[in-house]
Length: 165
Image (cartoon, rainbow, N blue to C red; front, side, top):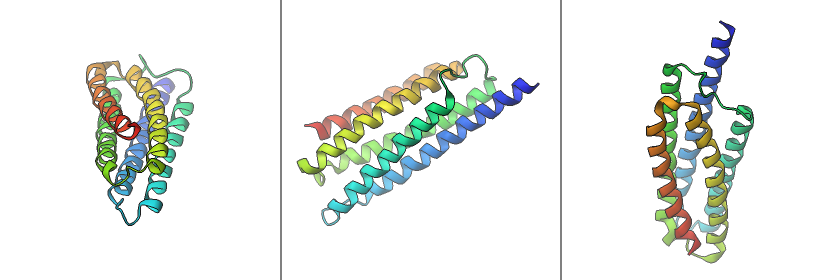
């Protein structure tokens, strides 16, 4: 009985962590939306800092999960809850990356593109680590998770290549 409670709490915590990251991604998207030619030199550093906050949160979440994952220990219903939170996170995060890509025209100065490229690469690395942990933890939704990850990878690739050119 105690094991079920711990597992359930772990699943709930993972859902809460994903929801928090989703909120941070949405907040960062709003920051990207607000960037224009008049506020470039204040708004872009603000966006970069928000992306760094996501990286820090992801690192904390990975540390909290420990070396292992929850694979094989989660009920199907818990896996479904985690998957829904994961799906929402990847959707909102893709929207953020697409918005950053779309803002390239106004942010195309080398003094701005270099830090954006750097933070996008670091963000991709940290999000990848988290995503792999989640995919391993919810094998019941393996196919759907890998599809969401593929879409997220595409958005990262496009954003990074846009700013790295």
